[in-house]
Image 1: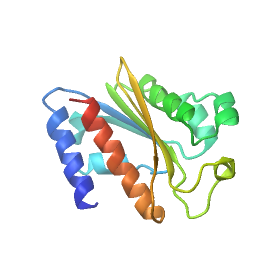
Image 2 (image 1 turned 45 degrees about the vertical axis):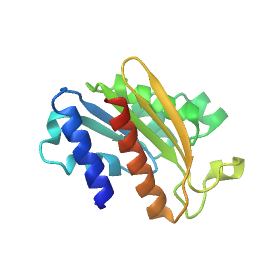
Image 3 (image 1 turned 30 degrees about the horizontal axis):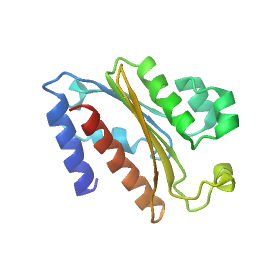
Length: 163
């Protein structure tokens, strides 16, 4: 785990434990790396409920309730999909906060790349019981760098939302 990811995860633990807030993750292009960063912190079971790794579209649909029509119309790498993923994660957990990540890490693209979404395009959504925030980032670098930046951004969004 990189130093920055460990620092962000530790800050998140320190922030969430006293508030008794639980987190759930819904990850695609990060393949569970956010969950791994969280569970690397001792005592994380006090603030981490579960993680969904929904790499395929069918997994997004079956596990998180992302509508097939959303995936067909907007693609897996879209604000609409990220927002449905984050809500689905909350609805299928006992968590108070959720993060969803879907993107194109590279080196090659996906069907989404041919629709104006280059490698490095990542959509995020964060939610609590009252609100959803979503953002798109275009990260530079190879697959590992895109994924690492996505994990850092996911953790930063959770820190921001849990204040």
